[in-house]
Length: 140
Image (cartoon, rainbow, N blue to C red; front, side):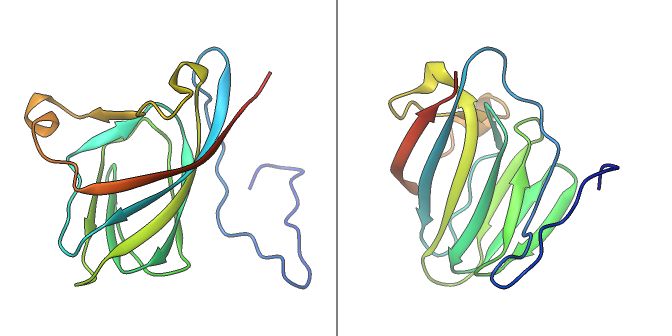
């Protein structure tokens, strides 16, 4: 934890995940959405155009973020900086869902995708997910 930082404590307050981030260039917005996938679905290797936190609502997910491989269960969170390659695999045997909040370039307002495939081969693979946009909030 950075020097001088404090962790908030108290009833109903528990830190889930925190990271120091690098914001995308220019104006940014915060986007919140929900991502759902069926049993066995796997994302192509990719990254996003900004950092963000995700929290699994239901199911079981194998999250490969850069060199890190995690098994994520309901209520658990993980972070993606937008710089490392990511592969997510639904390993629950049923549908899964997570919410994510990302800081993205304002140019993506209106729900434009922040997804960047790792290469042409990965770009050709299906993206077997359903997205539900909750909202976007620009920062001045």
